Image (cartoon, rainbow, N blue to C red; front, side, top):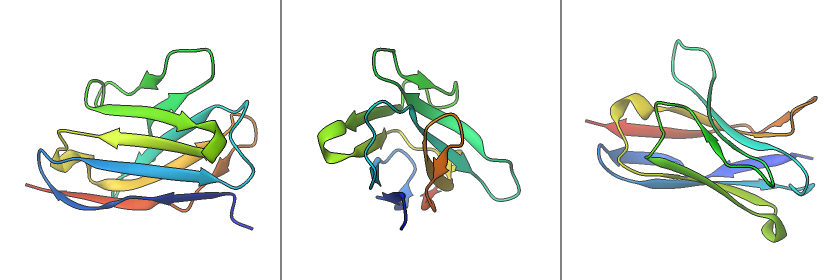
Length: 113
């Protein structure tokens, strides 16, 4: 059974917006949930994370443009991406937990200039 399923990726022009979703079959209550991305030829990097009772965290490169949120009842974490840039092009992965985390299979985001 696949634990995490991402969706919402696609092709968008620079300046556009996308919203990614990550559904966790086992739920998200009590877990730190995060979004990471990996561009071709680069290492996977942190994008954003959300933990109950704490302020969301963002990478400097997306601060002010991306917003992470969650709906515990729907077992879903979202990443709203605005003012997209070509350098945001990557496969975006959802991560559940900090110790022995689960990863989704990723969703491709391509931003054209």
